[in-house]
Figure (tube, rainbow, N blue to C red):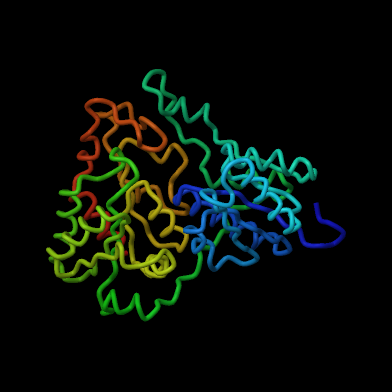
Length: 349
């Protein structure tokens, strides 16, 4: 694939969602470390660009899927723009309709194009209510690595190092008001209800942490509604600060990279913190780490899961979008005391 001694230039496609985009980072970092001659261009949506800051030999190309790259004509335009970058091979880590159309276009130029195997069959077996096959599936990180291996770049993920912590800007420092307290990030929201810990339980944890006066509790979220909820919580506790709605993603990543621990649902914040080697405590409702979306490099004992004896259909789906009748309270089987003890254990380690 090396063109007459020139560096190999691989296009990496992953357009969404934030967590899945963040999960490409440890794999890309391993690849660029183990193959320093390789140049990568990551095709993703503009808001996710900062996720790739700090990666060597990596550039980002913005996919403007709502405007200039919309529809067949827009994708042809995108293909022409990508072709001008002299791409030698394509690693499609998304495998959706858009990227499949791009595959057809790249085939015209005979550019090698390998697509992600999402493992739909085994995921279906893991999540179905009857004849469930409950076991650990291949991780998403490994699935991403397999795509590069097929292009001729086998990757050893065991040697991947986390990204370096980012120096905090004046704006972030002013917001956080630095002192000697340890920083606890809490991201209480998720894309689906089935993945969200009850808010009243989260408040109990925040209250306990607040009362020790040893920790600064930084609340993460997005969207107007989430910001309102988090502002209200922050108002109630002296040591809690709402970061939602005050920072762009670059600034948020600065902050995340300097946390002492992150408490997150099965969501994007968990993956972003893991990329910087921050200890992450994850809470799992109707989803389960066996589906392959566990944060990179995190010990499994940092995952607290709903009781499968009481709720044997877990995982009910890969994304948490299916909550069977009677499973609405599955997450209540994880007690606030359990979560608090786990956080304190990590903080005092």
